[in-house]
Length: 193
Image (tube, rainbow, N blue to C red; front, top):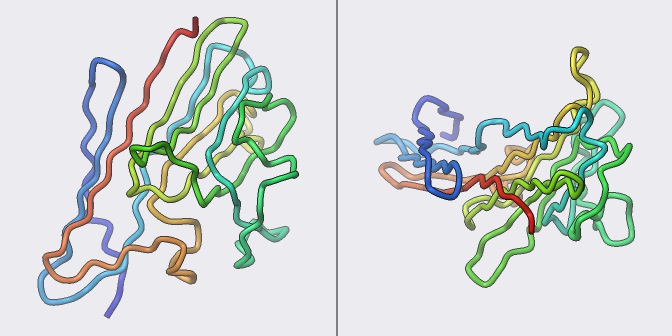
């Protein structure tokens, strides 16, 4: 039997010298297996600008999930290369309307994927560094937020892609009784040189 059991997951957050870190740890219940997806808190980021359009973003995904007109995943992963959604290098957010789940994350030699937001004029940047437990990143510009559209950019590390219950190959975690799963991410604010 597979089911979602949110109450068994835990998120620990603490302050480190270089930023805020979070970790998650999940242990399967005894006697049955569960399928589970994990995500961090919604990390909504701003660099002191009135609109997120003035910032630049870098998202490490080489693919993103295709959504239909109702924002339901179609089951296809689209390659970002040559599209307006390729943010593997810093690019202006501008008028881009993000509501995307990025997958196939590029990683450094240590296995860390990094998503970043920066504003050159004020010299501020924010980095979200994720270990290998996180295989997807949801990015949202908040266009539908009535009181504050485009005031910030949400960057949410996820252990699997949206709709992974229907596509377990997208990173859904299946925990056997007493098996554990853990992951760690870090958020760092920095002043650019």
